[in-house]
Image 1 (tube, rainbow, N blue to C red):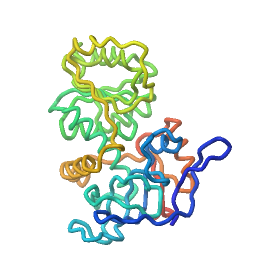
Image 2: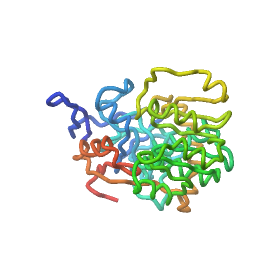
Image 3: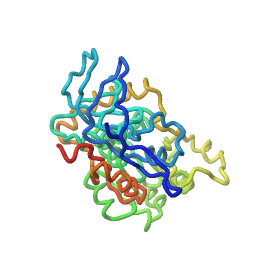
Image 4: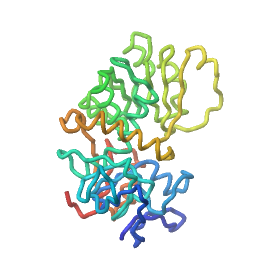
Length: 329
């Protein structure tokens, strides 16, 4: 089969579509004919050799496709359309997926839309509800609102909790998409100081929850934006991972709960439990069109390098998808 692997050329790690062995199934796996895979920042880290947890030479952690071997599964059959997280190996013609992570693709959605769901929606669900404990009509600040996780989080927060959603993004085009998805307060971080805008929007109280993709660059402004006893979930460090000085009393005096998280290196059991709950709660919203995956652009798998560069340029709104089968729906 064909699969995308990393090879070093001219001191740069390049993605190459190469002949690779078909993956071997475990007893509790499904074998998936991959129709579409999605690009994630963890793939970029793996390409650059920086993640430390790649277990497969083929990149990719989420796929959508058709079951071609279901072992003895009671939940899935050959021919089922499924989406879900894999332990690497997603940028390939075939991938193995633990059966307890597989989710059926709602009939109204394409394979490309299915591939746009697992990583970002599960991350958003985890950070909003499992860690962030977002409650009905609370206020949440979502940074990188037009990113894959951001577009998922806006919809989940509005539809499941009727939350007041404040977002930051770097262009009016991105902010308009956030508005269309349900965001209430839009902040262009290139033109506005978001902490002042947040205080104004919350009558000086601050937000109940922050979803932070940025890290160091936003530390002080996030502290100024969060209310007493607020929750702050760190899920990215696009703005740096090191701070020169941190006054721990600033956390203690506001009773802030600060939690860091990643999804890809989590245990198989954790991902299975998260996938099961998410599918049980959110699938009907997809069926009804109340929540939808947002796709920025689809690249043929032969253009995987261009897809990675598109993400590194931070121009995407929503998910970047790789087409594994020459445009088949």
